[in-house]
Image 1 (cartoon, rainbow, N blue to C red):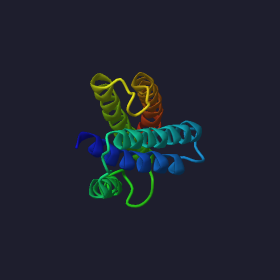
Image 2: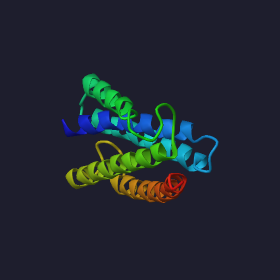
Image 3: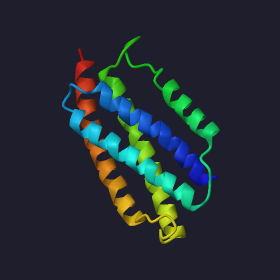
Image 4: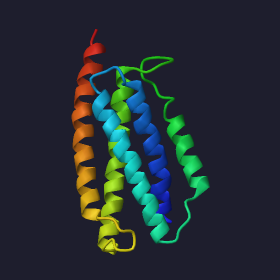
Length: 154
């Protein structure tokens, strides 16, 4: 089911956002990434409310597969055999942005299909929040790219 798929993908998104925040704890990105990770976790909880309102169980299999895919995505060519690199930050911010864009599409689809009374959610507010998250991710991605590509220019 569509909402189950998004709920599972949101589990991976929360993991990615929290890892980004952890990996950048001592960087200028820390505060914004921590806030973003908290918002994304809250959005996933709200999606859980949608599942309950629709009387749909989360799919443990889909959640497990999404989390496994997120962990596998850490195996990327980032210029370093082990560890986090400035390029890792860029790639992960791009991935996070894609997930937020998909979440925005979900909120939009749910807004068109329902007025939110069953779940008690304001989908317009959730769409606006996703837009704000996308703006933050894009701003962070631009800063991260400037750092990553200036360090590879040596």
